[in-house]
Image 1 (cartoon, rainbow, N blue to C red):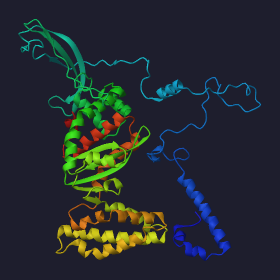
Image 2 (image 1 turned 90 degrees about the horizontal axis):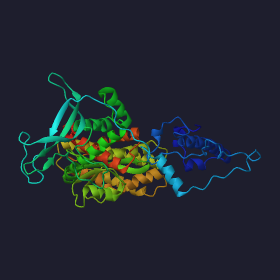
Image 3 (image 1 turned 120 degrees about the vertical axis):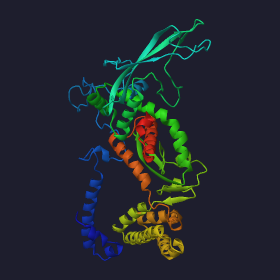
Image 4 (image 1 turned 90 degrees about the vertical axis):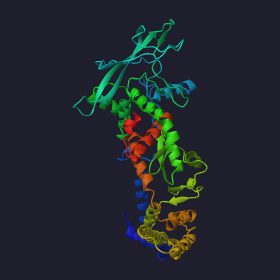
Length: 503
């Protein structure tokens, strides 16, 4: 760079007006060289530099477009220069048809292709225990059935792998292979009644079915959820872990099914208990971050309080806020500056968000921005110190009255810069004006928080999971992710382990 930060801070329109044409031309050459270097650095991405793919913004395309046609095995679509043999008689590629497009889309989908041979389970494990299931009563006459007094015979069986506590004197969990046998029993009325595995009703929103007819037991399902959600392992790595450490050969499809079934089982808990807690709490924290669902940009919302945390994935709209909080939410909400929260009456703004923006202006090169940044930092520092002191020993008078001259000075400063030509200075001034009262509510209620750290800490683990896993692939996977995350974080808020609860 030809011009340092120290040089740029001294350059403004007044300084440029004093330069001679020769001096202005020389300065313009330096600025042009610096601008080109900065633009080249800004344009660096995972395709043209050593930056990893995770540095790309979530809203950018996840699939790179092919810039050159792929040559077929026979080479009939290769482009030949004019004049070479075969260049004139080369056939043009045929126009794509709907059938070709559907075939290409089907080939890009993960999983087994239609018509491809499947693979059945080949691992044979010794049976550690057997469990018999007998019918309780006759399906025809309703008479109770007892094993000792009625003829019985097995009509079906299933196998289940689960993790159980070690035997007496041991610690930890061990794998148990159980054979479940279902009997049919003869009633004196002459009817054979059968015991059947439990099944839940189907739901249109879920492709997985809750049933006892499942290879993985409840504790093993909870263990898989712990590996995928809390340890942030992919399905393939979970499969590798189970094979290497537990000797279980499970497919990635079964592992994914376990995660989705656990989420469906927990959906009533989230929809009824956690959502009701979030809506009725006195102080709620809210935040949102970007989320990718197979290349589509969505947002991961979090609403958290002292005893519950709710995650939901959707668009960044006002309807999402109303969907979670309902129409009659009248409690305190701590949030960032997103405009969708402005319809709420009792709202708090996170001061560290404004501190970061003011510090960036103070360290910038715009003179008006530097002045506004210093003014905002001075006012917020004074207000925060007064709030901390009031929490220990409340002052005899109100904090807002004693700080009114300080706030009025900042208000006039923001009004003067609301139409400032410098973009970031103008944006900060307007942000303060739009939410003016929400920043200083703590002067009237010093017991309220000053930052939105609770929501940001709740999001941190899942933001790392997004960077590792690159989001989710399907709408059902997104829904399962949010449901499991809600239950896991709520259990941790209440000081209990989420895994026995999920099991």
